[in-house]
Length: 483
Ligand SMILES: Cc1cc2nc3c(=O)[nH]c(=O)nc-3n(C[C@H](O)[C@H](O)[C@H](O)COP(=O)(O)OP(=O)(O)OC[C@H]3O[C@@H](n4cnc5c(N)ncnc54)[C@H](O)[C@@H]3O)c2cc1C
Image 1 (tube, rainbow, N blue to C red):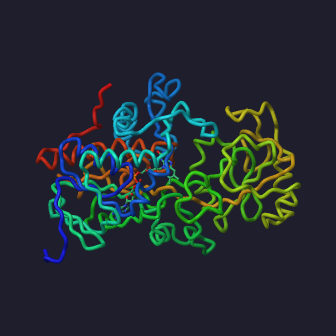
Image 2: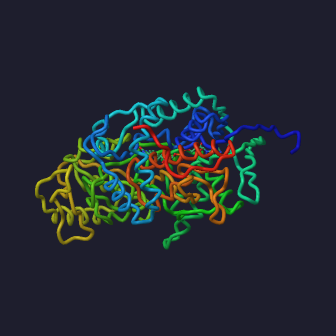
Image 3: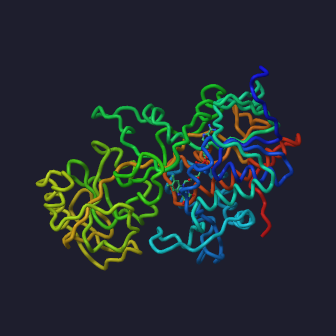
């Protein structure tokens, strides 16, 4: 190496500064390794998408502190199987599910505090444990704990290249600011590529209308997940990859949200209480197909398929108070005609769509907490639950855009979390979090599973990186927690 390149050496190098990276760094430090963590963001923006989270999906067989009733392994697995349409790895998925039932004591030990959901959450008191103070508090607690354990943290240190030998053994990481970090082992936890607009454009391409759909996507989380390392691993080192680059967690969010970091409060949660029309003022999908927590993550993609990648969620005053209010107020009108004008939709088509819907609602017993019997008959698309005429002023409309949460293209792993080259596991290079979530999530999403995957694999990767640093082989399977 040239003497001009500042060099650093450690036992375990962790790249990334979100949940998966922090879980890995803490595990490795607890195992006695010297650990260095490289975060591309400045300190004020540390924590990646993990800072935006609110909860963790947890299996449990009986009520457990903040979790009510039971959410057994089989039910969690069936939920995952359904949303992914089978594009998942059952062995890895069940490992994550089981780990989610026992990891919370370890999380508490490192400063995470859990609380029951507040009202307005997605009916998840049974399935999801909420972090007090949200993901920002979780990330801050983990950084504090990591620092106490002696983890060396470098902010504003984006890694753009790795040196890996012909056996797939990690040697060193090189940063864009000209530093070189050598280590006995390494964990990659640098997120997906959702903030890389060029890569999104390349993945989504041009549609039949000549549009580049991804130009109209908004990014719900950090601006720092550009997928630089993911691309480098796939293209330069030919690491085994998994997943489709167009698959992502995509939510319909307020079109007025900022390009990055709008977070949770820009989500529009009233879709199932009303109807959604596209730019041509026509309905295009069953708004009442299933409970909103099971459907909210398909609506980003549905909007992405519409002309101009925009749609409009329309409700009347009966819906107010029944969903978490978004941060920006809806466009308000005293008549449907006025609403069409304010939203700049073709008034005649809008009135036709709304009249057709209103006239064909068969209202039984409305119950938003159950798959109720209020439905439409004889129209396409149908609305299969919670269908009530939109007839009570004032009326509200929210313009929706696709909001990308995180992408699913990643590196292929087995239950050791090792990066693989030509189907052979690296001895000392591991991966966790969004960079490998696609092994479990081929498509679709069920709320809170991102943190379940990142926590399970972050801990496995950290444990195995510490073992590799001691010259020991990786252990397969989740970290065993005391009951
Ligand atoms: C608004 C929002 C709400 C969400 N809510 C939930 C929820 O409630 N529950 C849930 O389970 N999931 C939720 N998710 C998804 C969840 O955030 C992710 O699944 C999870 O945080 C991924 O963790 P991670 O550590 O892999 O990635 P991140 O937390 O995004 O961390 C990646 C880190 O890598 C750093 N980085 C990127 N590139 C480099 C590089 N080249 N060099 C060095 N560092 C780099 C980034 O700065 C960042 O710190 C939400 C996401 C968003 C955006």
